[in-house]
Length: 230
Image (cartoon, rainbow, N blue to C red; front, top):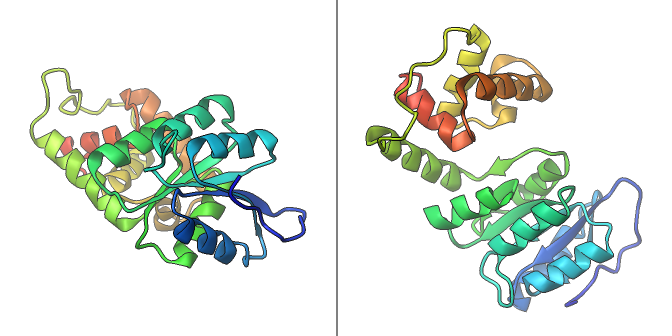
């Protein structure tokens, strides 16, 4: 392991592993995050193997994950964590914001995706959200996903279901939620817009996905665009 926090363990604090192959990034980041009263950096890892070892030694709540690392990259490490330690949330922090990296990380199970342009407050907010089971994508990543979804919706493959009409049994609220997903809002943003709780938003999304056979959030964006809702 490349380093550990010196702070005393406290109740209710999120236990975080910081993973980055560059010590000049990893160590200052771990030190800065450790200043937050509700975050305890329990390990700093230089590669995916060290991340898995830190999580196995546990307990760990959140891994702040770089994507480009030796031995085992961030996407494969995220996939392993999702399979072996589903209780551990992954927030990606990387310089890469291309479609392959974003979709690969989210497909592997990452709950958040930030670029290294993110400030300390953005990073701590994403860690707290991930620890609470929520997802956070920075604006650049959201815009990239929306652009990709819109491009796919404009030229659907023969097997694409984006052009299928929405089922008649969607409630007005479920249509509202789909519209807001199509506009790129997070669950929190939808909750604030509709003056409902995030738990209620999740319930509407689960019902919406079940009725429409939507697979994931990117698929929901395509359906919203194809239906003229976004």
